[in-house]
Image 1 (spheres, chains in turn purple, yellow):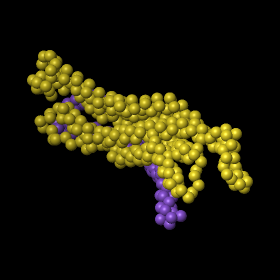
Image 2 (tube, chains in turn brown, blue):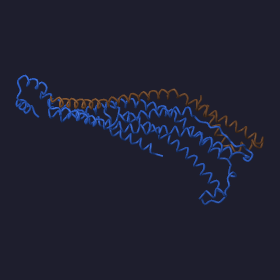
Image 3 (cartoon, rainbow over the protein chains, first blue to last red):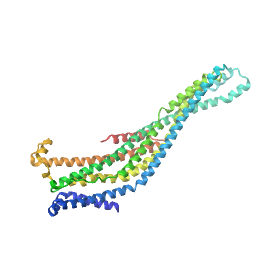
Image 4 (cartoon, each protein chain N blue to C red):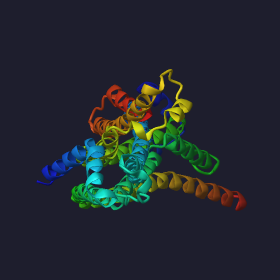
Length: 112
Length: 320
């Protein structure tokens, strides 16, 4: 329904523009500058309708994009957690080395 | 070391029965054999893991580029509002039957700022995902583990009061640790790759759903409301002498304006074609990214398919 309406408006816009010079000339001859302004107002209303329909079509997907943003941000957090887990293994090994080194020094100091 | 050699070496140690029994339990030749087998199994699976890590890294790079391209595409679409406003004002002046008496046109800008900012935000989130995924695919991770284990082994060995590690075990330790780290990393990459597959599928579905709308919008901005509006008899709006100044074409005044307008029309059409091509290439790149994730998710990913898919994304993103 919306698609059809938008398609009809698009056709009307294209038809107007293809004959724009002639339509505006006729309007000017009939009613001067004021008539040209009126015709252009009508045309702008058609353009506005096109944009409103397109906005509406895009808005229908907005909630999906919001859900996608939430899911994507959750995955960012999960990935950070995984990266931390991986780093933690190396950190633990490094810490263990430091502890073993410390024990070694203590043993040397105590001359055991 | 074979079993016989092992027992000869074991007998050569001056141990009492109880000590020998304990040591035999710990260093049974079967255990040694199993450890070596385990090492080779780890080594083989580590090769596969390395491939997964490498492919994951490439996917992360391309994912970052595709996400950035998505942001660029939506930014370009948001700029069309100003382009459209200027073009509509220009059309109003050029097509007015009496431009001297007309007021200065002021077309109100029409666009989709709210809708586009939401979509830019979505691709910004996707970009963030790939940046962190890139950290997960760091190739140096297993080397860092090997280095850390080497340091641990050396620290242990430096304490003379502690019993020495068997030489074989000591030599294998960093490599085994590196291989284990490789496997853990590859497993995590696989897990997240599967999620990225689902995420890119959702992004692609939404993109495919909206691409015709954006193409129609470009058609509206460049063709229906601009190129078509300039098709009428407007030759008297142009000064042939001024056109001749800027044109290098060898035409006389009768045709030079028409030739100029022809070029102007072609430029408008080319702008529209170029924008639509960018949309189309982006859709294909997003689809390629999804396909790459799909391949990496498989139990036995085909490395060649994954690499050629990733390369095809690069080609699409580099095309103008």
